[in-house]
Length: 321
Ligand code: 8YV
Image (cartoon, rainbow, N blue to C red; front, side, top):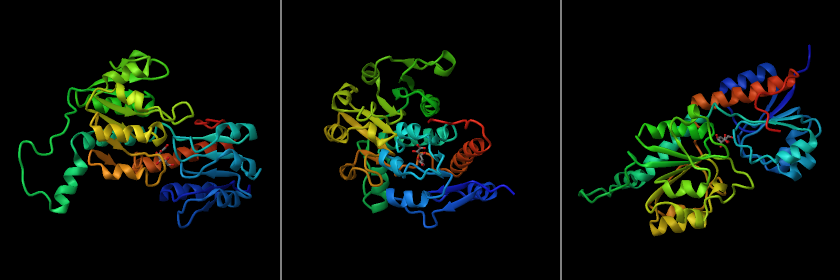
């Protein structure tokens, strides 16, 4: 019998995914689901043919320098690959894959939740009721920003951006977008293309970030760009914290130039910048964009499809390096 490839699975994955792993591979699981630091990751990677990590494991240049030669593929359980130094992977001939498509709907749902939650002051209201502090009502009470009929600016009209756009349309919003390339009319579905990000910002009553974190996009939403947003705009981030300059967003939230922000991703996860916790006009979630049963299973299966292809001598469908 042929030996099965050894796979290091860095975090706890859904049962159905683990079953398939046990059937087709020799998996090594992280029983108590803690985050592997670089040293533990490298030590556990010894003798492994593949690693199936989440965005919580960082494959920096120095990790690649010490990565055991047995590891031939990193099949991520994530669409984002900013935790993996792709140049180092290419230089060492390590194949890297991700899990696109399968999490777009779940993440788009969270973008809408954040937009509504931030605009309609959901966190603040929930805290008030829960704390017993809801003792009065008036027409001037908890007044928020209406989504219906507004303009939403999507930064990054990829799979998640398009899934979010179709849901924002359900609120009769006009969709504007900035993307590296203009989409074809079918993909656009009437969305209005802005070749320049600055132009998009000036019309975005709601701004929703959907582009990957790269060295170029780091701090994309800085003070200068935030100043271009219409006064009272709502900012939503389900992509990566690195896209936002926190000092700038916090200033704008304090001044009210940005009326509210809905954030699922942060610089410095887990935890995020503690200064957000002091503000009422934010709706904060702990990086749960893709956290549905359906999507977690689908992400695992997609990562396994990539491993299956690689070990069958085929090109993995979602190869990014
Ligand atoms: C995941 C994500 O929960 O896929 C991504 O890039 O940020 C989330 O969907 C996480 O990355 C799992 O590794």
